[in-house]
Length: 76
Image (cartoon, rainbow, N blue to C red):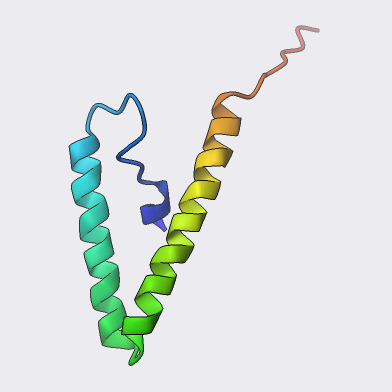
């Protein structure tokens, strides 16, 4: 699921090219494994990419919420 958490297009990343390469390599590896393990990989692979894209959107919202969360500190 690391594909979900690699965001090469997020603002402020210093090494986004490396993340793009890693994301591409992971997608190629996923496609190869699907070709090896599933007879209907031509149908399944696009569905898997669609699900990963949806999960990525959800992860982006979650990370934004976490990063923008207000933290209260009790000094007592």
